[in-house]
Image (spheres, rainbow, N blue to C red):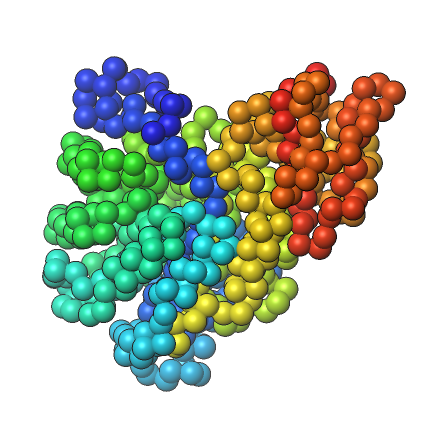
Length: 495
């Protein structure tokens, strides 16, 4: 377990169950991991359609008459409730009068091509330390043969144990396995059209039967699969001691388990948005938040890690955190995404290094196709970039922690990111080409050295004011950028 213990304002020594939960340390394995793979693979992966946004379009700011989160394919069923939406036009052209529910047959046919071991091997090569699978998204369809009946739609689950098969494959490949569950939205219980964030909040089911159903399913997932990560989305249908007991029972079953920050308990605020004034207040707040450039969930009473979406933090945070995002602008597979809609190699690896330097993890999503259970080539290519870079020396960042400085700039114009493990400081150089780098921020003791990939000692000189000059030019290949080297017995120079 981690030796870093977080305590929060207002907690009195762990006397209450919530107090005990809040004093629990975040497991070391999660802090060490740095990189995980998210998987959004739902019935919506069959049509695989979403509007491709242009420019920097925040996911929770709506366009009048259009669905919320229209760029997310996994929201396809909601988009079909809007007659003028792009998804509705696409559906009419390609599926005529077929229902969303009919995609079950297509999804099951695609499962015949699924190879979970191949997926797991691919994720492991990319450097992932953990995998989080969506077990039930907002459409309510479950990817495991649940024994908890849905009172609104009988048999709304896979007969094949997708969750169990992938859990086994992931663990056999040496990674941890976590589960996502949509506790805040389930369109089999409340299918109102969601066009604004206020609509979203109002759509959190108020039926007590839903709370019983969701809790029973999460408990079933814990008992069957012992997930290393319990990743809820949107909100939770109840709070108080009942929710704290669910958390406590999870930690008892999985002592080094991790809970995310999207368990906001349903409260009177959820009913406030059904009034005109409440809707206006909530939507103004969301617009301000989105315009800030960072989408971060509200803070619930208990969590282990924060989960900014398609954004990250600029500085080290008080709490552990991970950025979750797709490789394009959708989590689920979107057949409309072109080459320019995906992250470039520089953006992917540069943002990953920056996240690690600031103390975060990257939870990078893959969205397999529903028609054949294959991970599209554009996504495979990016996993291969990560694999090649990890093999070229990037893997050294696993297990690090933020250093005194998180970023720097050499006199030659190279952007640097720092991360530490004990007295060793790892320096990631974001910009090529190589050559000689002057380090103003970090120095080494007389017995220290500068080490490149594969343990090769690098040549070091000092400039007239004593700054280190490191020659990396001969060692840097195309797969190495961002180039990472290590200073042993290092210490910070004053700025």
